[in-house]
Length: 156
Image 1 (cartoon, helix red, strand yellow):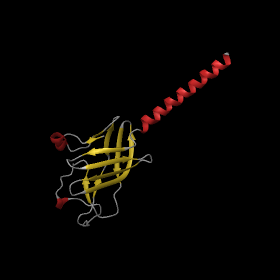
Image 2 (cartoon, one colour):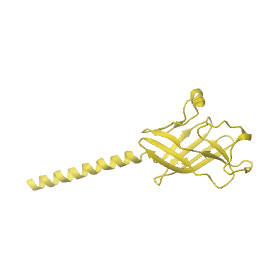
Image 3 (tube, helix red, strand yellow):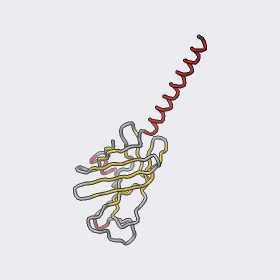
Image 4 (tube, helix red, strand yellow):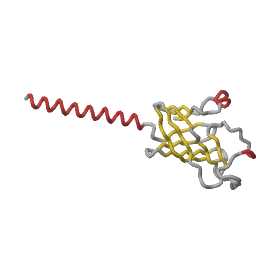
Protein backbone atom coordinates (compact mmCIF):
# COMPACT_ATOMS: atom_id res chain seq x y z
CA UNK A 1 0.00 0.00 0.00
CA UNK A 2 2.81 2.35 0.85
CA UNK A 3 4.48 1.74 -2.54
CA UNK A 4 1.23 2.59 -4.34
CA UNK A 5 0.98 5.82 -2.32
CA UNK A 6 4.56 6.77 -3.25
CA UNK A 7 3.93 6.05 -6.93
CA UNK A 8 0.74 8.14 -6.86
CA UNK A 9 2.61 10.97 -5.14
CA UNK A 10 5.45 10.90 -7.70
CA UNK A 11 2.98 10.75 -10.59
CA UNK A 12 1.01 13.75 -9.30
CA UNK A 13 4.26 15.68 -8.72
CA UNK A 14 5.41 14.98 -12.29
CA UNK A 15 2.06 16.10 -13.71
CA UNK A 16 2.05 19.34 -11.69
CA UNK A 17 5.66 20.13 -12.73
CA UNK A 18 4.83 19.61 -16.39
CA UNK A 19 1.83 21.97 -16.06
CA UNK A 20 4.06 24.65 -14.49
CA UNK A 21 6.54 24.29 -17.37
CA UNK A 22 3.67 24.39 -19.89
CA UNK A 23 2.29 27.59 -18.29
CA UNK A 24 5.75 29.20 -18.35
CA UNK A 25 6.06 28.35 -22.05
CA UNK A 26 2.57 29.72 -22.83
CA UNK A 27 3.33 32.93 -20.94
CA UNK A 28 6.70 33.29 -22.67
CA UNK A 29 5.25 32.83 -26.19
CA UNK A 30 1.85 34.49 -25.73
CA UNK A 31 3.05 37.61 -27.55
CA UNK A 32 3.78 35.56 -30.71
CA UNK A 33 0.53 36.26 -32.49
CA UNK A 34 -1.35 38.78 -34.62
CA UNK A 35 -1.62 42.21 -33.00
CA UNK A 36 -4.23 44.72 -34.21
CA UNK A 37 -2.68 48.19 -34.58
CA UNK A 38 -4.70 51.41 -34.50
CA UNK A 39 -2.45 54.19 -35.75
CA UNK A 40 -4.77 56.44 -37.71
CA UNK A 41 -8.53 56.78 -37.97
CA UNK A 42 -9.89 54.58 -40.74
CA UNK A 43 -6.77 52.44 -41.02
CA UNK A 44 -6.62 48.70 -40.55
CA UNK A 45 -3.25 47.29 -39.50
CA UNK A 46 -1.88 43.98 -38.24
CA UNK A 47 1.53 43.17 -36.79
CA UNK A 48 2.34 39.44 -36.84
CA UNK A 49 5.20 37.99 -34.80
CA UNK A 50 6.55 34.57 -35.69
CA UNK A 51 8.53 32.06 -33.61
CA UNK A 52 11.54 32.32 -35.96
CA UNK A 53 12.06 35.96 -34.88
CA UNK A 54 10.53 37.39 -38.05
CA UNK A 55 7.63 39.81 -38.24
CA UNK A 56 5.24 41.11 -40.87
CA UNK A 57 3.26 44.32 -40.77
CA UNK A 58 0.44 45.30 -43.10
CA UNK A 59 -1.81 48.34 -43.08
CA UNK A 60 -4.53 49.64 -45.35
CA UNK A 61 -6.14 53.05 -45.25
CA UNK A 62 -8.35 55.19 -47.45
CA UNK A 63 -6.02 55.27 -50.42
CA UNK A 64 -2.83 53.58 -49.27
CA UNK A 65 -1.36 50.19 -48.60
CA UNK A 66 1.67 49.82 -46.34
CA UNK A 67 3.78 46.86 -45.31
CA UNK A 68 6.98 45.84 -43.59
CA UNK A 69 8.95 42.70 -42.89
CA UNK A 70 11.90 42.21 -40.63
CA UNK A 71 13.31 40.73 -37.46
CA UNK A 72 12.26 41.05 -33.84
CA UNK A 73 14.16 40.50 -30.62
CA UNK A 74 13.34 40.66 -26.91
CA UNK A 75 15.24 42.37 -24.13
CA UNK A 76 13.52 41.74 -20.79
CA UNK A 77 9.91 42.87 -21.38
CA UNK A 78 10.75 45.00 -24.43
CA UNK A 79 10.06 43.87 -27.98
CA UNK A 80 12.38 45.44 -30.60
CA UNK A 81 11.53 45.50 -34.33
CA UNK A 82 13.92 46.19 -37.20
CA UNK A 83 12.71 46.19 -40.81
CA UNK A 84 14.57 44.69 -43.72
CA UNK A 85 14.31 47.07 -46.67
CA UNK A 86 12.92 45.59 -49.86
CA UNK A 87 14.91 45.65 -53.06
CA UNK A 88 12.28 47.66 -54.93
CA UNK A 89 11.53 51.37 -55.18
CA UNK A 90 8.92 52.37 -52.59
CA UNK A 91 8.21 55.41 -50.45
CA UNK A 92 9.12 54.98 -46.78
CA UNK A 93 6.56 55.53 -44.05
CA UNK A 94 8.18 56.16 -40.65
CA UNK A 95 6.16 54.15 -38.10
CA UNK A 96 7.25 56.49 -35.29
CA UNK A 97 6.22 59.68 -37.15
CA UNK A 98 9.50 61.33 -36.10
CA UNK A 99 10.37 62.27 -39.68
CA UNK A 100 8.61 65.42 -40.91
CA UNK A 101 7.25 64.25 -44.24
CA UNK A 102 5.74 65.95 -47.20
CA UNK A 103 5.11 64.01 -50.35
CA UNK A 104 8.03 65.77 -52.07
CA UNK A 105 10.47 65.08 -49.22
CA UNK A 106 9.58 61.44 -48.61
CA UNK A 107 12.51 59.05 -48.56
CA UNK A 108 12.58 55.99 -50.76
CA UNK A 109 13.85 52.46 -50.20
CA UNK A 110 16.41 52.81 -53.00
CA UNK A 111 18.57 55.83 -53.65
CA UNK A 112 17.40 58.19 -56.43
CA UNK A 113 14.42 56.11 -57.48
CA UNK A 114 10.88 57.15 -58.38
CA UNK A 115 8.18 54.82 -57.03
CA UNK A 116 5.42 53.81 -59.39
CA UNK A 117 2.16 55.70 -58.93
CA UNK A 118 -0.23 53.94 -56.55
CA UNK A 119 2.47 51.61 -55.25
CA UNK A 120 2.62 50.33 -51.69
CA UNK A 121 4.48 52.22 -49.01
CA UNK A 122 7.18 50.57 -46.94
CA UNK A 123 6.71 51.12 -43.20
CA UNK A 124 10.08 51.33 -41.52
CA UNK A 125 10.72 49.99 -38.04
CA UNK A 126 14.17 51.09 -36.93
CA UNK A 127 14.99 49.85 -33.44
CA UNK A 128 11.28 50.32 -32.64
CA UNK A 129 10.54 49.38 -29.05
CA UNK A 130 7.36 48.09 -27.47
CA UNK A 131 6.65 47.07 -23.88
CA UNK A 132 4.89 43.69 -23.89
CA UNK A 133 1.82 43.56 -21.67
CA UNK A 134 -0.54 40.60 -21.39
CA UNK A 135 -3.10 41.93 -23.85
CA UNK A 136 -1.35 44.89 -25.49
CA UNK A 137 1.90 46.37 -26.74
CA UNK A 138 2.91 49.87 -25.66
CA UNK A 139 4.92 51.70 -28.33
CA UNK A 140 7.84 53.70 -26.91
CA UNK A 141 9.27 55.60 -29.93
CA UNK A 142 6.24 57.61 -31.03
CA UNK A 143 6.70 61.27 -31.98
CA UNK A 144 6.07 63.21 -28.75
CA UNK A 145 3.97 65.93 -30.43
CA UNK A 146 1.69 63.36 -32.03
CA UNK A 147 1.47 61.44 -28.76
CA UNK A 148 0.55 64.60 -26.82
CA UNK A 149 -2.21 65.52 -29.28
CA UNK A 150 -3.65 62.08 -30.14
CA UNK A 151 -2.30 59.64 -27.55
CA UNK A 152 -0.27 56.52 -28.20
CA UNK A 153 -1.08 53.90 -30.80
CA UNK A 154 -3.43 51.17 -29.59
CA UNK A 155 -1.95 47.74 -30.15
CA UNK A 156 -3.91 44.76 -28.90
